[in-house]
Length: 295
Image 1 (cartoon, rainbow, N blue to C red):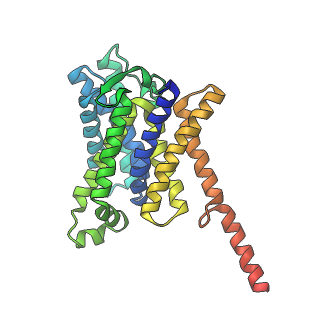
Image 2: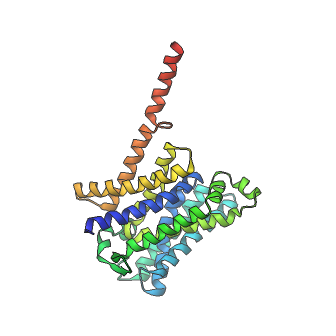
Image 3: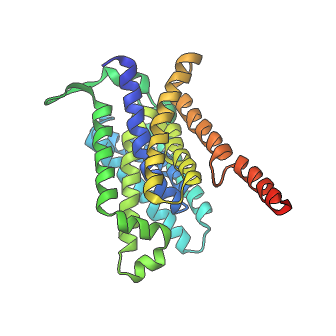
């Protein structure tokens, strides 16, 4: 497979995983939690490096998951103490991200881990770090990890589809039916953290946030059915990766930044043209009603 195709495939796996997870973030009205976790995982990655002296592998994943769960726990704790949810998130993620930045500057030393790398990623270098898999052959490590994460995300969505649906739309009803809402909240935050950490080194925080929020927000404007929303969101994520790579090649600019821009372009088209909630349909519908009334 060519260099370009590995980059597109890797970014598409990010778009698909984040797109599926993002639907539940949107439905739970926790979209900005994605922004918080995508920044606070830096602290987990730095702490994992300080222990293992490695910036990849299981330790990085475990460190990022720890940081994500810590973020969710602290936000939940502050919210229970009557601090507004948005304020709680702002306090927690800026504080933990700042600690990560300080640790990079003072404790990590001369290693390939810096704030720019954390924000923008290094997707152009993905094809150069490979591993051998049985029956498949040589494949970039990041691609293999993201494929595994996608399978994990799909497994948990399918296995607990009913529980995700009920807890996302009506947590009180879920609790009354005996569904452990708190357990599923932290399980979901773990999935968000795993997806974020796996994508973090490859594409950076900016694209992770864009892929978690924007495709799902666009899908939300197209349909009211959860299963359709999941397919649309994942598809928009993949389409953003493809269009973004084309934009980056055309303009000779950042690949991750171009893919993030592509998610915004897809949302803008959706905002204009979606049949139920689109701006154009809102203009056309009153005109049609007036014509029917006049007739």
